[in-house]
Length: 163
Image 1 (tube, rainbow, N blue to C red):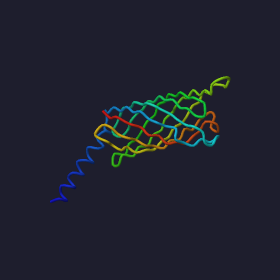
Image 2: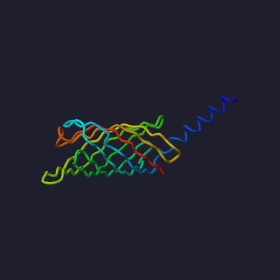
Image 3: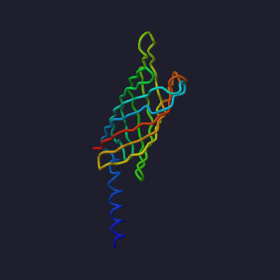
């Protein structure tokens, strides 16, 4: 009898935990980024914050818009992007890709760089309740016009709200 209740409980929990991936669900997030590796420098201080909003256009498929700020070794970058994500409803893994525009300035007399990025990522949703999740992910910011100088691999932690 005890085993039946446990199986029933796990079935109900697993069914409700991924109802967030249905068509029509809305999503907002805040993220902390920049724990990463870049190609042109070793070490240095990295920090980034971002916000995003999304909408599930079909079950498991979300379109996403993002805005953010990154600071690295005295340079600031403001960015704006759009992309999509696919969620695996069986386990909470997601895979995404997007395009992002970044305005990078080191300050002073340094030139301002206008960069375009291709940004694939892979992550997992840990649900705290039916609406709130913590989403760690690994991403690659591939700079399309200055690959050697601005491409980086990093870790991101997001806090998502599904409604």
